[in-house]
Length: 98
Image 1 (cartoon, rainbow, N blue to C red):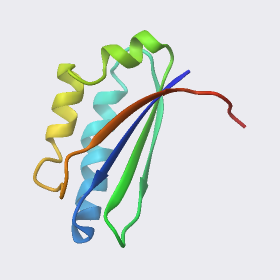
Image 2 (tube, rainbow, N blue to C red; image 1 turned 45 degrees about the vertical axis):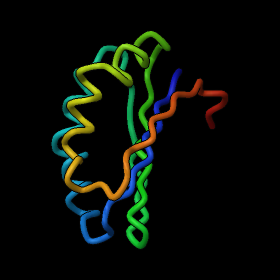
Image 3 (cartoon, one colour; image 1 turned 180 degrees about the vertical axis):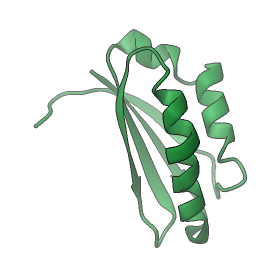
């Protein structure tokens, strides 16, 4: 499996709005992507930092939905007004799972 991690920062008072967008808009779109398996959103309400972690079946699926793709651009744009800095997008291979 392959993993995309998107690290973002929002104003702490906007955390609930970011969670709502992720749950109600981003996740339904992700579920329609080829090879999407699951995702988690980790949030630090004190600092506004969040990590969105998505799992993909193959590296090709991860890349096809990744940086530069219309899908990812569209999803990231939903948060544009909430960010205090630009997101950092990183890809990994899942090394182990318990």
